[in-house]
Image (cartoon, rainbow over all chains, first blue to last red):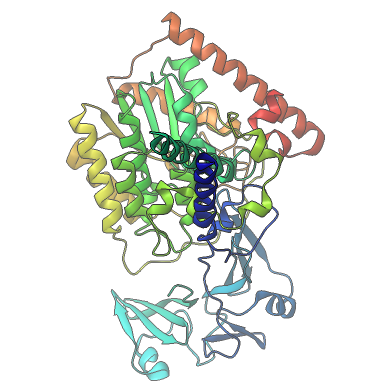
Length: 184
Length: 358
């Protein structure tokens, strides 16, 4: 009888150990889905948060926003590159439009995709404030005021959970990138 | 006496049940992502490797151990995992040295570009460490690899992280309770199909091309460990089109290699050997079988010139017999993939070695 009691107690202890794990994650029917064990996904910006917005052919492209409405409004891209995650679900998508490159990500954990960045690649397009590749560096302060951070000629202007990165070489703007800051 | 016996019996029962439940719930990595089985696969090898190749998919898809053996007599094993970062590679090296001391280590340096554990790095940490045998170096490397949300205890007792796995157990969890099927040939993951590279976006300039200190520290650790064990360390960069490998990064590696007298093989310059219209299965990120075999034939003579400890071991009966077995599996895998490509144009079913061999 005592043996049975001891075994029952041991089984109960095991049950308590397992129950202590809780059940807080979402379920998924894929076999051996290691992504299920982590829900450490980037947090898409809530709608309405004042992230940077780039205008392209009258289409608003807000960093961190859902890509689908933007893609529908933009129409087909000139080029596309899909870069799947190594071994697990999810991928990064890069699209080229005239004068700009759009980056999207489809997270591995199945959370909503979002716009990661917009890069201006020539002077055929400019920012809504009027900055373009090849503009004199002095235009940066005139158009944007005081920067938040500067690293080796790269000026950063933060807004919401996004930043505008402007690189200067030899007194000229050579790179303009809007980026969603999806890491805390 | 009876009471002590009862307590002892209960303790044994509890431990056995705990072990069995943990084993049942542990991901088996026998289907996607099957790469999670690569770490443990090493323990089934013969631990007689002159060359250990360490890195991410930049090595496990790109270098053929069978070609290294059959044509150059170098017995090699690839210890690679998806998105294997520099501190993961150090873990692989330290783990390897618990079982054997190779003559040379070929280390992929691409992961120097990743300064810290990424926010979404847990699945990759798990793939590296789930199959690794428990040891103090392993735990130290786990600590350096963890994201803030992870706990060390869950690596010692993986059961603690499998909350909802109960609901998803299937026949595979029972099928592979006791055994695992191989997913690679000595760490090499074969893909014989072709997906040519298309448009590649221009690389963005960076404000700072310095590597992260954690990655550099791991590299220095590996340098010290190999020197301590008398192992030749060779640095390697695969000919991948993406992620972009900046010239500034390469200059740092060249300087590091010169400072420490290490050979450095940068295969990006092997453009006359690798054609990303034919030799890649994913648009230029990794090589397919044809690309891997070409790169290996390009790399191996250079290795033998620059790492004098590597010699032709063909003709040693035990090694010949062992590698003959591996080569047979390799050819069967290749044949299965080529048959599937002829039918569907791509490799799906025969990505898994067990499907090819069944």
